[in-house]
Image (cartoon, rainbow, N blue to C red; front, side):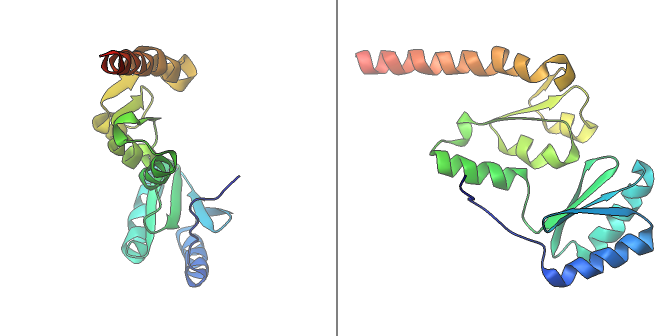
Length: 166
């Protein structure tokens, strides 16, 4: 597998984040060089503001769920990843759809031509979406593929054949 993008939290910020972990009495989990803080949702929203005030100019900070606070290098989010993959695949944004339900899906849903929130998604995600589908547990993504994506693909194929047959 090829890595097309890699960025880590600067080493000097890791110890500062660990201090915040202790000060705010939250649990910090790390995977590779990124961090994930966990705590009850209402309290974590307050911690999120404090962390953003202190590190927001150097790190991207957002909740992926009400009880998870993700801390990643500045400029790293799902829209950035989609853009890199899109370029790698040589396709346009018009060909992209994104389904999500968490706070960390917001940029990706806004970036894609078709942004889909799952019914169990956060209100902010639903507001950003073009379509709201059933939850993933209720085959919402399959519904998006069957109802939205396949008809679009078939229409594109039919239009392409007509153009080439002229």
